Amino acid sequence: MSYYKRTTIAGKTIEVEKYYNNNHKKKGIKRGDKVKPTTEGQKKINSRNAERKLRQLINANFEEGDIHLILDYIRVEGEPDRTAEEMRHDIDIFLRECRKEYRKAGLEFKYVHVMEIGDRGARHHHLIVNRIATEILQKCWNKAYKKQNKIKAFNLDNSGNYAKLASYLMKYTDKHRKKEEGALQKKRWNASKNLKRPEPEIKVISEHDFYRTEPRSIKGYYIDKDSVCIGIHSPEYYGYGFMRYILVQLDNKPVKLQKTIEAGE
Image (cartoon, rainbow, N blue to C red):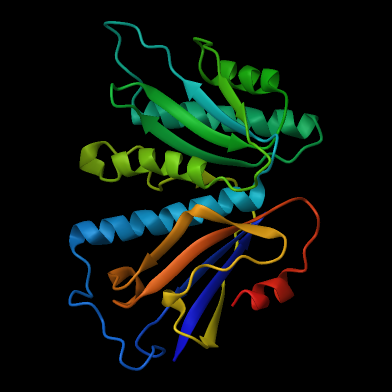
């Protein structure tokens, strides 16, 4: 009665997924009646997988003091809003200027970028960037957008777990997926090439019936209760049961991950 365990280390977080498939499942466990997801169901699966990748990308590359940056546009009655092409042009200039300024400061520029059109039509750019003086970021935006409105900058906290921020950003990427609906970008987000991309470790575990148990914490970590999800039948996991959750490091002390992860199996 073995199952798969997928473990992904991203910064101060460890994401754990446990699931069966046709090759490894407990004897007697049956699939749900519907294994193949509907079109709408597949969209939700795709969105959830994309959010997981974005969450892990942010957790692996950004930390306390780095910046969630919002670049707004000034709206004037009677004037047209920025088009998607104009927004892409603006952000290209902004990113180019940031690379220059970070280089001058002896830093390597890292970013994740999402474009948004709000419910009332307001245009925004959301970015996560590594820390630098906000005056420099304002200077870069002034060069990209001549109306020179104020940027909004929010420092990341010290948790190392930015799942809520990733979910917040994903909400906007789902709004504009189809070209006919006014897609802003080909990808849900753009990111600098110098970011670390976490790779999962997948193991086959031959033990107890996992989905009847509670998630287990390991030494030096706590369970993010909002991340816990346990299901019986899911098209996302080959029609069988699953469990997933996130462990978050308690402090900045180094932890011997391999042994503690194996202890939590």
